[in-house]
Length: 376
Image 1 (cartoon, rainbow, N blue to C red):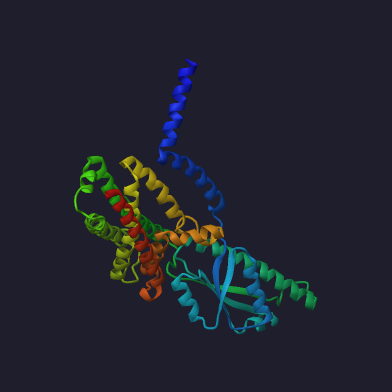
Image 2: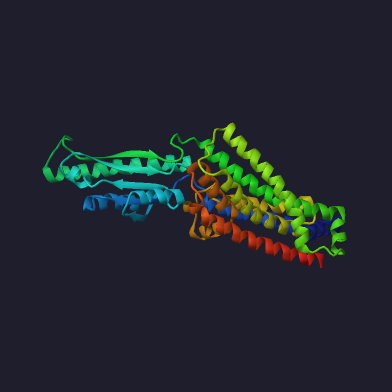
């Protein structure tokens, strides 16, 4: 009995290690745990901040340094015109703008209230709410600091005539911080990308399961013709699904559409190339529908994770931030939020469009090569 049991166990191990998809699944589960432990956090860190300092004093620089010292904020740009903050917000380069008026140090020196302005993007309400709380905490500490400095200089024992900094908050894009806008738009982007991967993959695998894929191998049909014939109907189906998703977002959940819907459709067509290229590669590799879904899981979770929808990209380690550049979903989420919430055009979204086109060319050319080898 013991010998038979050992033989059966050996057979199970051999079958397990022969199933590449299952081995990858087990390995991936541990990788996923490590990735979540490293990056998944509810804290908001490294919020990209642009500063317009009209005062140019030691006092204003002290406030800027206070923001920069805090891990939650990263002062990466100091602009010479407050309108430049608008452009940086639209392009997504910064999520916070700090405007210091020319009377800042003078008001503090005279014991008055110095006003500053904080501009929050607001496209992601969770990040915005946390950043607002962090900024308020920072300003409370800063007010305490300058009050004690004033007491030490003048010998005051009370709190009369003590200066303080008051912030005027302005939230762009979603002034009411309605989180459903962000959820609906990111889910729309994720759904379109997932469908773009699954549909062509399922189509190819269905051919394999029906035995017609082998028949195609002996026909004069080229790999490019086969991919084109499969992708064009899928594009039509995805456009219908995208239209339904847009209609639900606008009319059921009152998501604003501030940009051009035609531009969004145009960039979506470019994105289809990337997702469908991945789908064809998945279909060539998988042997049945179960493998397709299993391998699709390996793709969907990292792609969503690296898009910035689950964890802000600024919160990730630098190595993972570099990996986000190969995720089409990262660029498509930027496009979706940019068109619907920010109302920006191609003059702002061209980097994302070019990136999607480049990834589409890489993925499609790779899939054509793989399919050609399969048909050979």
